Image 1: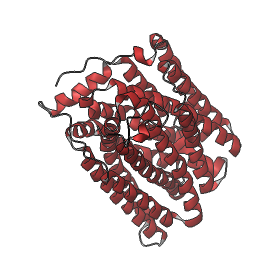
Image 2: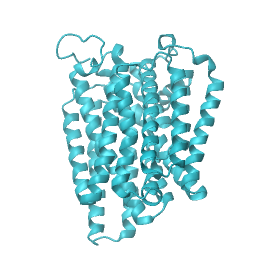
Image 3: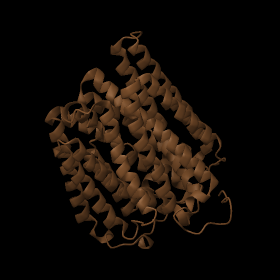
Image 4: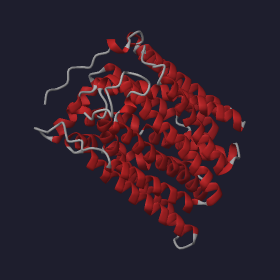
Length: 428
């Protein structure tokens, strides 16, 4: 464990930030997320501009989700048995290369140096490559994150880490939409590549994180132990399942380019603002939770938060006012941020050190790719039902899922965090 820069910090709102490696981690996560969110918003708008198809937007999420889910368990296994800093450097180099390829093909397409019909398949292929990187990124960062601060301040660290992610998610889409709208896709990609390069430098500055797990059996047995550990904890599997299905049906973000172009008619600049507003609601709520923790009765608060998320989705689908739509996107982000804090804290506290990579990989299969799978569901539903009915259907399904979860988990509702205990892990 890295030592704080001065004396040991008391548990306060800034406790986690007193650890040097955690600060480097948060800076790296901010820069990478900023670049990734910029890229997501402009690629979605660019593909819709070329295809005029909501289903094509859904395929963007599917191309990333397939590898991210398909090899997530292997990514967790590798994270547990590998040195994490070196692993992250390799991941970021891979993402930098795939973003550079997208930069080149979009630039060449704008100059008529490449056939437009080839651009979308190449972009899909690079998004697939990013999905492969994500399968390893999540477990590696989860291990570094949890080992950079002591356990007693995990909740505080979760708030700051998630806030950094959300702040980048505010600035990234807004910057992407505005720069793309005013200066074009070439300048936007230059900014993306610059922030990816900064994340590489910050990763290089991290200390070494050697493996805490040396496999003594087959890879399949090691992976199955991580799966069994998660499924033996009712609260952990319940939180993962709730997030998976609520985001699967309630993920309207993939359809925002359609709303920006055809329903609200606000263009690329408005799309950036819409994407940023969701994260603005999230980060303001997270900063408040650095002071006022939602972990008093975590399961009760999680159910309330996901209910608010579903209602916000429905109201957004019904709105025809740009400013009213921004309000509902703001509340969607606020409610989602509460569930993020609760889920991540539960994961950190209930997972033993030697299984963090594999447990994080299981979590990634449920949560890490739920947005992308939800994007495919939203695109498919929009093609069948229409854009607005698809969003309302998704929000309604979220409320149904929360209701079913409430009926099946009533015993967890009154529990405080100190009454929650992990199952006994399998010895290795």
